[in-house]
Image (tube, rainbow over all chains, first blue to last red; front, side):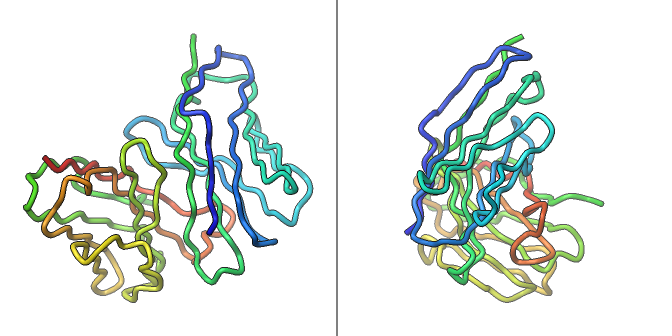
Length: 116
Length: 116
């Protein structure tokens, strides 16, 4: 069975600095998608960034980028120039392609605090 | 467009009582998902509807949980009778396609259920 591990329950970053959130996963599938979702306090989860496993190039979305290491099964999220609005729970998620199901496998989340 | 709406946002009930959670997906989204996060743990998949049919209900924990989606519009998740371990945040998500496309699923803000 697939698993997703986020080993950092909480992280802090100074405003304007850079922070990296870790995520590792385990799967026997060769094709899959990886996601980072952000959930601000009492608000809905929104997609931050996604990565297709067959793409070697790391995905980027403005200040958000990933370091995808397929062999190591690692998928970290880098937030550059951190802003107060980045404070949220961040969830790493996996979705297989060949398993015949569309469910996401989530990690336990990392709470990011941004210090002014 | 309106987002995914869940209500109530919070519910506190006594063990043994019944609670019904409701999710209104984005209009036109055939795919609707329920997930649950028990405090401090990962977000876990419960089930996936395509229109009014249950595509995948492999994550439903036991027969105290009943999900319905009459007419393929809104969905309800009933817990009867509730137990202490049912406490957590219940998320609903919807999408046009089963995979969620480029932007992933659209999540609601969740219902925080506390069973005392």
